[in-house]
Length: 484
Image (cartoon, rainbow, N blue to C red):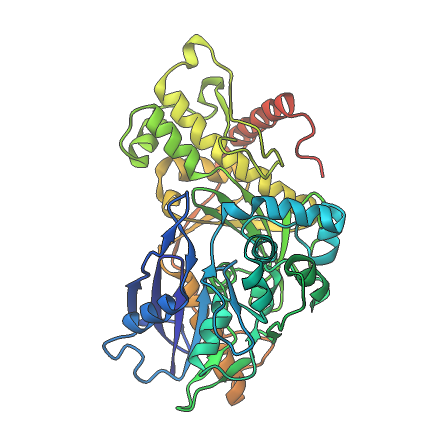
């Protein structure tokens, strides 16, 4: 028996969990907020001094939280680029999050390589505004002097691991983090340095990609530091999902990911072929409109919160008396309709009631995510159950409709920082592998998440009829939009 720690450095805070190596039981926890630097138009930081992450980490670990810990795993926000000069100093603040400044750069890169299909074949994803490769293109075009000084590229978790180890000559990363950069292929397991040069204008040093159970190194005090990974991969690992499992995450936008044994190449760009934290693959499909659909509807109806919207929706019935909402309020990625708007169909005198609109909002959001699930299913990804994440997963209207609309069992885990737990599980794996007590091919079998399980039951046929009504309206309004 031993103890390990997992830290999750998100865009807004650092959470640390200290866990038992055998069971995964959380023994103690720490938390500290991140200071907000320069907000972008969406109110989120777009440029952040990485030292802020270290300060937050130190605060979260205060009070002897890490006493007795034998290994640490690091999870951090994805898509953050930390450009370093040849001496390892930051060239400029890290570029984080979904930065709208880089949308034009994404389009430039797509054209420069010959289109979406070319990118999908090269690295399993099509450039998007948030991706590191796109930010490099923006840097080269907008800050050429900083681009020229850039000699080393790290992501947030890479940089934190490197700092914890005392800035060694060797810099490492994992498959999961590398797969989201836009210049590493999960299918081939190799970097595409030519794509870095296409974006930035010159070659740079990239971190070595090491295995899921490998240690990045050991501190002078003997503390083992595992390779680390991105938040998405760490959360999947913390949940303990495997083949047959999908995760639907309900944020302002939505995402659907599932474990799969191979990388998927998708020329439409709807699937992003990520690697997971265990040696498998994690194809992801994103929708732009999830909880923002619910918030917009609540505001339209003059309701104070989503709980009130859910209560109102439960007064309606499945199908919302024929009312169908295509929730493409911010355009959409799945299907690929970046310049479209939402559609409300089926208006009749009897359906023009607040409770039916509230129900249509929930059904529209979930049907949009069911479309994303179908993208994966159509490519041979098995989905036997769906883990539903996010505060909105607790809403009665979501839980009432999700199993029948998704057509499968739905699991709602108890709220927890699964990214930090996943990082701790990775640390336990690396520690066990280094001591010879764990196979480097098999992660520790920790206790699964405590969860509520929802079955489609007798409502399955009704839910599938509602889903078909949604699909019919989508096809009438945007014919062929979901075809690859």
